[in-house]
Amino acid sequence: MASIYFHIPFCKRLCGYCDFYRSVKLKYIPEVVEAMHRELAAQQSFLRDKTIRTIYFGGGTPSLLAPSEIEKFVAQVREQFDCSQLEEVTIEVNPDDITPEYISELRKTSVNRVSMGVQSLDDGCLQFMGRRHSAEQACEAVRLLQAAGYNNISVDVIFGVEGFGAESLEGTLQGVLAMGVQHISAYHLTIEENTRFGRLLARGELHETEEERSEAEFLQVHNRLTCAGFEHYEVSNYAMKGYRSRHNSSYWRGVEYLGIGAGAHSYNGEMRRWCEQSIEEYIGGVEYGSETLSKRDKLNEYVMTSLRCAEGLSLEKVEGDFGAFERERLERESAKSSIAELLINDNGNLRIAPEKMLLSDLVIEALIEL
Image (tube, rainbow, N blue to C red; front, side, top):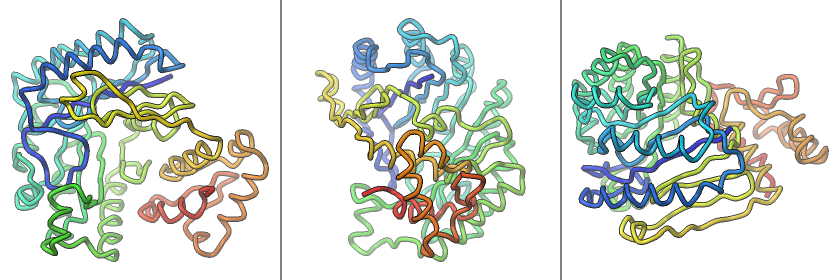
């Protein structure tokens, strides 16, 4: 099974924290869409596994495209690949793009999962982050989707925002739970250099959240959502039973995927490839950067992705794929005092307890092969 990702690199406004490739030059949308269709047609041979299980439209803001344009991409995938096992087609949306008219058209497409960038239900926090919707718009957008029959909805939440503490976060969590959605992605705010927040940080006008508070808010999210019946199945992801993101889970399991669009990445089991062009360059013809993964690269990727998930890594798989020496090394390193208290050896599976997953990077750094 494999996956296909479409990167729609357009936004009406740039959020202060986002470092994904995106552009506000909306006039280029038709040309970029046309170039993406050309790229998809040319990349049919990249995937070794031609059976597609999931399709994902991310960005940027895919909801800036008409639903009919989204369906044209799906139709082309169906023409070029085996979609007999296609289970999940996800689109990311912004709340203020969701109108009854938009949903009516969306229901005519293959999209069966919607991921909404809510981020907060505190209007002050939304304004601080540069979001273009209000808390009420987010709640109404979810209501409209549910009324139209969508029953696989995910919302994003951001915590660790300086100036908006536990009380603001609790209000957001309560409001999101009241929506009755099936999936919640909760991300700690990361301040990247090439963003507005990064520039404010460099000038001393913004401060990163203290580690102690970050841990407290992570636990606040974990406890609130798991007590409400959500499974904490990956560092930043929570799902009701049966509603894990199949697409994102495929990334963490090392499944092949083809990325289409400026800013998209691809992986076919042997090679990792990416497109870092501007939209103007992309329209003129696609160019890629790439790397062929060594055995060590593959081991490190397996350690990194599996330890971010509730199931952890299988020492038996490590031995089968990379040799007994690597299994012994991981067992030895995992027993060291610096990380031993964070790890559980569960019948040959090394995993991090979900409530301690905020420290997963510390464990991963200690276990990867340099």
